[in-house]
Length: 152
Image 1 (cartoon, rainbow, N blue to C red):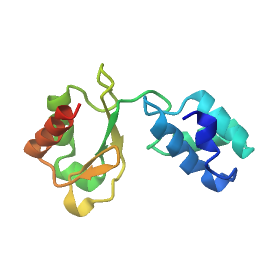
Image 2: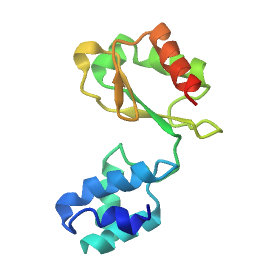
Image 3: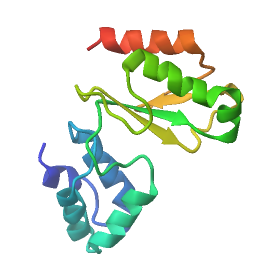
Image 4: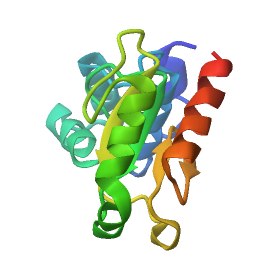
């Protein structure tokens, strides 16, 4: 589906900005928003490029650089961090070979930090794309990545 078709599913109203950005990013095989995407959205919504850019930079769920098929968000809230936030990152690195801010060479995985995923009662947690994984330890993380790799 071309980008104009994606955007035209939404009314040209600033209230639809986040939905449009999500839809464009989710349909991009490299899971990010390009400069051309931002310009197209600005034109469609009759707003400035800098307004759209500011929104994209503000929200951590958007990216301006290519990412992997699976975006792993590691919760860095104080609670997750106290329970085992740094250990999560190490366990992820042991399983897929990359740490925070990195993408695997095959563009399957990217690891990012997230301020809070909203499941403090089941910390520590990570989010992979739209799915939340709770109450994690090294064994659960290993199972998660084995499952993803077996589906590749």
